[in-house]
Image (tube, rainbow, N blue to C red):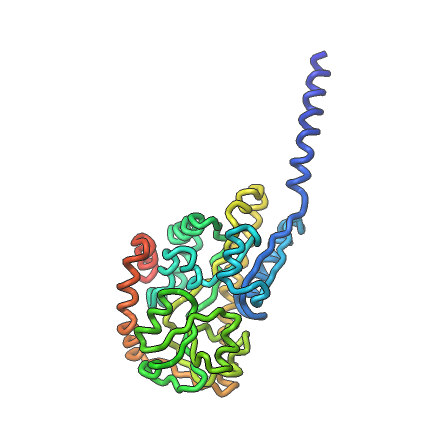
Length: 333
């Protein structure tokens, strides 16, 4: 009788567990949107992420990618991820200011320098800086999946040579909606026009704007080199594309699924950072092949840019959590 009772209990447990086990094993599809051009370092990074997730999960987790502004700007798709209409969205760090002013810490002009890039990566990947930014994401209903490499932005012009800092004055420059980016333009005597990324090429063609600040690799991949004539390596701020997931969707994943996604994101980020160096070198050569005049700033000219944009750093530091600024400063030593 005792054996029969145990058998009945075990059978009931197995039968009631089957739907849960089936649900855990059922393939899931996660929809990921990003605005970047084909072949760009952000784009290929997410393609690598998709490949790794599907390989590690034996295709029990599938990633469906919507890229190149198919579903709107990064701000729009991140709002969709926040609402749960999409699962994941990639947004540039300037556009993340629309979700929390804390993200402006990353985009303050010259708060980071390429000389300390590995230290910044370590703080994002393993340190308190990454965990602090995770908490910012969670405060707006999102979960950080990947601090995707993007790069340092440089100013470019369609019509005016950019041979010294003063040449930036009076340019009609495309910006994101980031208050920091707009303020930098104003400090340099430019006329900022916040324009969605997908509309920027047309705006440059039509003369609505005649300048912008972006990575050479993205400008090359997005064919903006067809209208750009002049550039300077201003490196006025470092930007990331942050891959974010709807927090409730993340919490509903099993620990195994979360582990697969986390591991794939870590490996994809490392791969993408190495690939970015190669792609940026190709972009510089593409600029030269196109006859785009590139001014490489002297140390004195770069120091002038830092001095001219110092008021922006000072002003917005009051609106950003001091802890984030401290953590970023610790990576620049």
